[in-house]
Image (cartoon, rainbow, N blue to C red; front, side):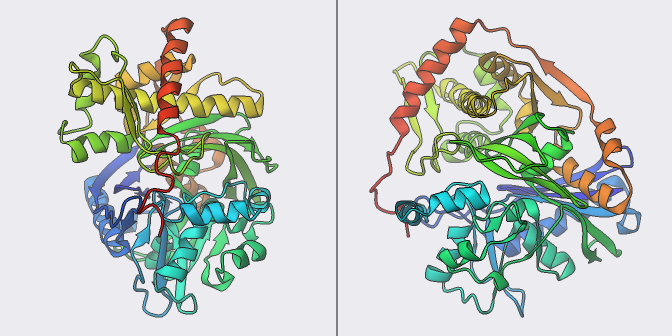
Amino acid sequence: MILAIDQGTTGSTAIVFDADGRPAGRSYSEFTQHFPRPGWVEHDADEIWDVTLRVGSQALDAAGIDGRKLEGIGITNQRETVVAWDRETGEPLHRALVWQDRRTAERCDELREAGHEALVRERTGLVLDPYFSGTKIEWLIRHGDVDPARAAFGTIDSWLIFKLTGRHATDYTNASRTLLFDTAKLRWDEELCDLLEVPTGSLPEPCPSAHVYGNTDAFGDSVPVAGVAGDQHAALYGQACHARGQGKNTYGTGSFVLEHAGSERPAAPEGLLSTVAWGVGDRVDYALEAAIFVTGAGVQWLRDGLGIIDSAGETEELARSLDSNDGVYLVPAFTGLGSPHWDPYARGTIVGLTRGTGRAHLARAVLESIAYQTVDAVRAMEEASGVALKELKADGGAVHNSWLMRFQADVLGVPVVVPEVSETTALGAAYLAGVATGLWTEEGTREMWREAARYEPRMSADAREGLLDEWRRALERSRGWARNQPGEDG
């Protein structure tokens, strides 16, 4: 059996997968979100570690096994969140800066205006945006009282690898999200590290995704930590998108469309990212990506921020209670806009409100915004690749909302396909660990993928384009809203 740790933005999940790739035990726990200033988002790395240990043990209990039955442990994680810890004591030196954090927006502007974005795009496939890890590390050094001479920096996978095995390492996929990693040469780029004043010696050792990182006895026996990948790369692997041109969308806190781009690194098209898909043995595959920052987080906002729902599942019934959206649109740019717009100064906007607007309209507007943002991302990817999407493989928590999946198929105009195991992020991490330890072959993991549901589009082209036109009008209202506003940069 394989234990997969899925360390997400708002909580951590642990799933035990059996020899057939089916879930045998599961546990989940949320952890604290810290918002010290507008646009700032932080996590407590020690709390994440404590939650990881707890859900891992609970998942084993739910499966009725202990560590002695495990063949390996896979890790998948929120990718661009940065942890700094003391190399000697292992204690965190600052709260983790979360991928949603926008405090380095002005610094990214400075770097762009100084002409550095072309170099960043060429070496990393990314854009200069506070979403990525590099300027967060620079901020910790400049403003967070973190001494790089004693600090180890890493993304969340690196933090968990260190806590489990004592090794300071990361995998290629997470390294490729830092603004500091040459994705062609698969090493830290000295020029980019110098640009952000990050010592290469403070960064983790990059390794393949299917790789034995070390052993841990955290769950009762010596078990290899053997598969590591950023959440979206793991989901692409778990969706069996192992061939060029295959793609998926993961609906989580944000949503991420990835398309397998083959073994040759693609140029990064306008509005999209080029990234490492994974490393298996000596083979490295690449992907094109569209990153959407707020989708499931919008539903969480309805629950925790506004208090108009008690659970995410209520949104489906509320959306069904309306015959249409009545002209109400919500752009959930709470932390800016990602692909294909890349506007860190956009902010959340609601348009079309009337006296008759109620909580059902807000719930439906949040769900519709998830689908509209996905359409924007897919259209940009189709334009860049010249290949029309034939179907969208979908995974993540939102696939349990059948209203949303139906609406997504309608506004996208192609079928949306849901796999039997919807938590393909964890499944991909398990597959990578299983391949690394010899439990499975890659061909065997592809044969394990099973379709559970298919949603065919039913909406007319005219109705689809009418909705999308109104969405674009609302989108423009949100653009650039927070530029020159106080509290947006530190």
